[in-house]
Image (cartoon, rainbow, N blue to C red; front, side, top):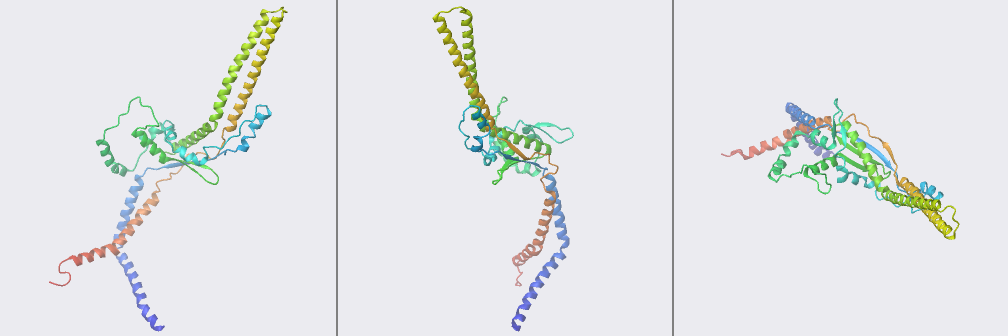
Length: 372
C-alpha cells in the first residue's frame, strides 16, 4: 500500500503543477486579458445602445365560461315564468379561451388594428395610427439595415408592386407592405391562456410605453367584441326577425282596428242581420290581429332576454397600465455577457490556440527538426 501511494503522488503533483502553470500563464498575460475585456465591454455597450427600448403591457382577463345549466336558468327562467316559452339551452361555446391566441394572431384581427389611434408619451403627445407608428416611428438596430441589403437588391431586380391610389384593404389579398406590417404586429401582439384557470393574458410590446398600453387596452376590447358578436350572433338574428314580425303584426292590428272603427261609424243605427254579421267578422279579425300582435311582442321580449343571456361577461384581473421600465434590451446583461465572452476568448487563445499555432509553425518550418 505504501508503494501505491508513492506511485500516485507524482501524478497528483504534476496535475497541480499544470494548473499552477496555466494560472501563471494567464497572470503573465493579464494585460492582454484586460485589453480584450475592455474591447468586449465596448462592443457590448455599442450593441446595447443600438437596440431600441421596448415596453411591454400585459392584461389578464378571466372570460365567462359557457354553461348549459346556467343558460337554462337566470333570464331563461324569468322568460318562462312570464309565459315566453322555454327554448333550447345554449350549446357549447365554439370560441373557447384556448382559441383566443389564434383569434388575436389572425389576419383579420391584426388588420383591424391598423387604423387604431395611439398617442406617444412625449412632450408633444403626437397622435398616430398603429400603421403610421409601426412604419414611421418604430426603429431597428443599425445592423438590420446591413443585413437587409441583399433583400433590397433582390427587390429592385423584381418588378415593383403597383398599388392603386384608391386601394382598399382586402384581408384575402394583402399587399407586400400590408403583409410585412401584419407579420410585425403578430410579433408584438400576442395572447396566451393558462390551461388550469383559463385566464387569458394579452401582451403588447411597443417602443413607446403609452402606445403599448393604449394598444393593449384596444386589443382586449376588440377581442371581447369579437367573442360577444360570435356568441350573440344567432340570438341577435332571432331578435331582428322577431322585431320584424312584431312590426308587421302591429300594422295588421292597427289596420283591422281602423277598418272596424270605420264600419261602425258608417253603420250606426243599422240593426240588420247582415250588418251584425259583418261587425262580428271585423271584431273577430281585430281580435285575431291583436292576439298575433301580442304573441310577437312576447317573442321580442324573449329574444331580447336571449341576447342578454348569451352576452359573455369578462373580469379584468390585471388592467392595462403604462409601463415605467423597458423590458428590453437588458443592457447590463449584454455588457457583462460580451465582457465575459471576451475574457474567455482571450484565455482560450493564450492557453490553447496560441501554443497550437506556434507548434504548427515550428513543425512546418524547414529545418525545424534539426536536420540540414
